[in-house]
Length: 165
Image 1 (cartoon, rainbow, N blue to C red):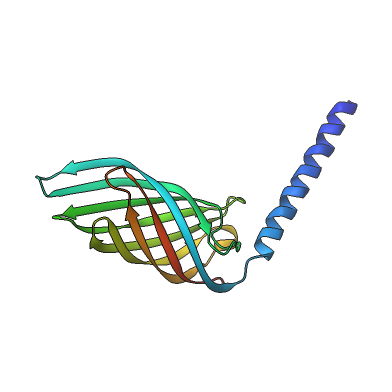
Image 2 (image 1 turned 180 degrees about the vertical axis):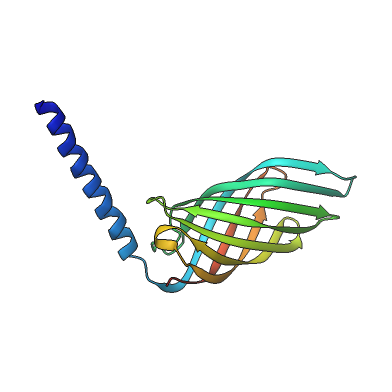
């Protein structure tokens, strides 16, 4: 009987501490601002070869995003971006969506598109909402996706503004 009570108290203390961490994380983030971040990723999906000079890829690039200033917004988030990528004679045209999940489990959503010459794809993205502290998130950003040869890996540099209600 006594050990059950100790477990309940322990669980209660743990839940209280987790709630305090979540509130502290949300409190440390400004309601609007500018940000820069870097996102290292690896591609997993399908590549369809359409002749010697063209391929179309569908899948997900995923990895971790870091706010380059160390600020709370989009810092240390698990990031997964669904995409369709068309490379034709060295020219890339891609679009997709991303979900960024922070340490509290809150999510930010974005839509993006880019066009460029391999191995780079500069583009634009727009926040389209989120969950938890990111509910109602809006804003616009620019980014550049960079491919590391034909490894299926790369990184993206993001820069933009955000606004929360």
